[in-house]
Image 1 (cartoon, rainbow, N blue to C red):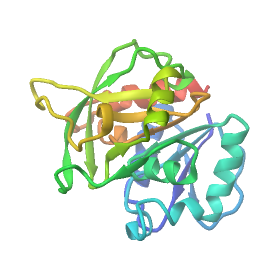
Image 2 (cartoon, rainbow, N blue to C red; image 1 turned 90 degrees about the horizontal axis):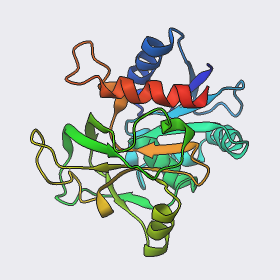
Image 3 (tube, one colour; image 1 turned 90 degrees about the vertical axis):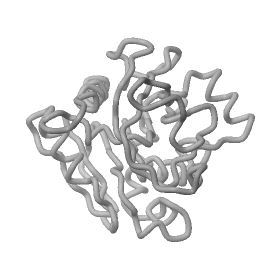
Image 4 (cartoon, rainbow, N blue to C red; image 1 turned 120 degrees about the horizontal axis):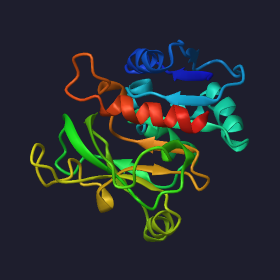
Length: 228
């Protein structure tokens, strides 16, 4: 299993993700700097969370035009697997690999807490195929622009094609509300071929070993197995 994590100025979850992947696979993934225009062949590319380029212009807008992203787009065009988490999700939307956009949280405040996610039963993705339909996960979020929005046609396409991966759902621990006002409670979506996944919650912050939950480890393991 060959995994590469892209690193931009302002990334702050790259090493957290590196540790999480190494914990699961026993092999340290490569960290690839944003100025690199080429990378060795890999099975999975991960765009980590953080504040790439200080979130100037729009979150992920500058990172989406970095040299390394061209290599990532080539990888995706060949059917390669890609995971974007938080800022990585924002970058995927800016590249056009995924539809929609992420705007300011509904209450205009940074939100940092655990949420309950539900895996949508009608998805069609090898990255999530080992998880039971409707599986619930407790994973933390930390974002200011996590409010997912898509035009009506795009939203209908996501629903019809099974491209909605996760939704925020009520739980006794975290309450009934979705944390950012996202359309239709969407927390993560898939590409049409199911091999590109963007999500706001941080699975690398829920791998056990002192974390409140180990559900992120479960999710990352499923993604890695799906790629393999």
